[in-house]
Length: 264
Image 1 (spheres, rainbow, N blue to C red):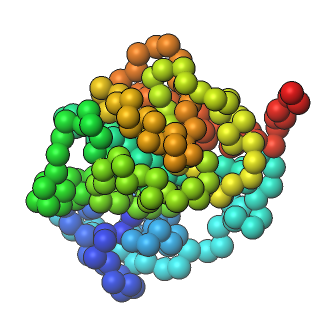
Image 2 (cartoon, rainbow, N blue to C red):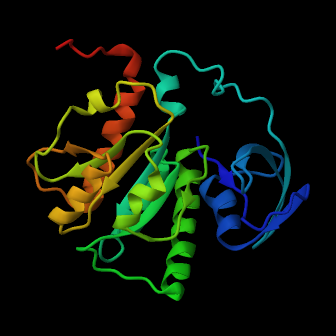
């Protein structure tokens, strides 16, 4: 279900005037008419109910109210296959690719429910950020996440962390759950199902840049407890590999209560 994400500067007022892209999204994309109500999220990701009060040539006014109790299950009410996936916090450590490919990765990660996105600088990463570059990219990626949330109906707002060097990944992750290193070579010690067999509340995914990981980087992560996952022999673009990896983890978690590992 599409939704509207309130601007980051929203302060909790009961009404709000909107112009520009926000006005366009409500009036021309969602095609909301005066008096209609529709779902939304405040800047903290809390569901709200929005009513379109008035529409002018270039501005509309909305009313914001607390959302009625969601009919979908909450974390405490989930049953069956949904609970394993919905309650697991996914952190994506993404080595930043060239060009605008990171925009697509951020969009797809948001749509598929990644909770935290961490840009990573590795040996084969071409882009390098100074403070100004990072501010500009953070602003753009925040807009991309907002658009993705509105389009997909994703409930949680991903947290976008500042860029780190790959060597900092283990200390930032601190083994809070399975750390999965998706590698272009068949180095896997176990199956993805095997890694995710035990109950966990957090999973980390580490994805390399176009040139892959240097051998020393792979060793560093494996020595820190990260487990390798092989995505097959096809050569994938980095944005495809990321989506493939997230989808694989999400499906395994989604169907976790339906499968059993064969005893060895």
